[in-house]
Length: 343
Picture 1 (cartoon, helix red, strand yellow):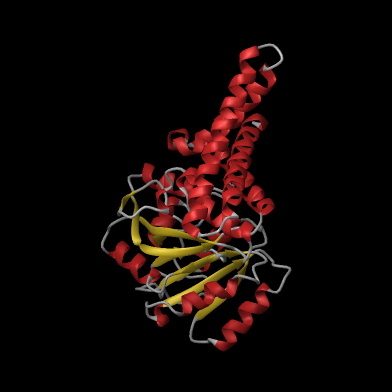
Picture 2 (tube, rainbow, N blue to C red; picture 1 turned 90 degrees about the vertical axis):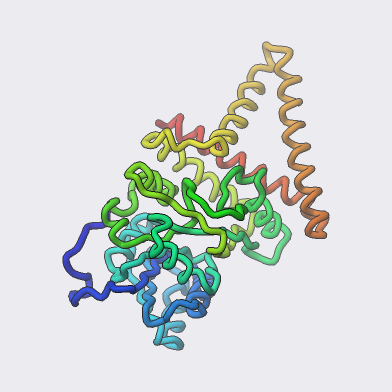
């Protein structure tokens, strides 16, 4: 957990006034880290009021070399790398916070590309007191120039794929359960004790649950925009959503009231299919119900794929989007159930 400090890690006097610390968990991101750093270089916020702290999980690829070369070419951007030997996201975030000097702390990922006014709008919203954590729209972009990556990006932006996760497509500002990444006053993070390092995923949602329980507010502003590079293959997508579902179940044990319908539908769907599949041997009606449920789900997916294929003028999306959504639902729901069974 983050400990409150009377002095900064560097050993000098506090330099927090109006300074913004951007913290980035990172591990083996040589293909995407430069996109983030270049986006930060283009920010409308004064560069001399920015510091970027990358908490690296001891990357084994060329990530650190890429960061070093970037810093050599752009020494006016205050950028440094700190070690994260635990190699988990919450540990990386807490480590970066401990090394941060800013009054404002903005969390970003190595796969993210913030809009040019991202930092400016986040800081303004915090200064105006709109929320204790503020964020905006997550624009999902393909992680590669392939039909699979394109289908995954479309699926991850569609309500059928992500339910009522407003930060993926909403257009109106207001209070929400969570926002991607998040921008905070440093004092808020210290008061909450930082990110929960017992959760390897869903650490941001869990932090927002604690924030809301303590009377704080999470604020969504659609003018705050940040692109995110989605997974490039169905295998990578399945692994990602398995991790999401597994750790969501762990988090919900502590905060059951945070459960939302979009989170419970995938595991219920998987569970119903398993029960019906096992029941066909002694309940004749079970076979018909199994076929009916699976057919209705398949038709809904195909209809979504057809609409998006027409909209995007890409016939491959007729099957690509349904496969991506089914992968998301199946992996998330199965992992959720598995996590409950392990408990």
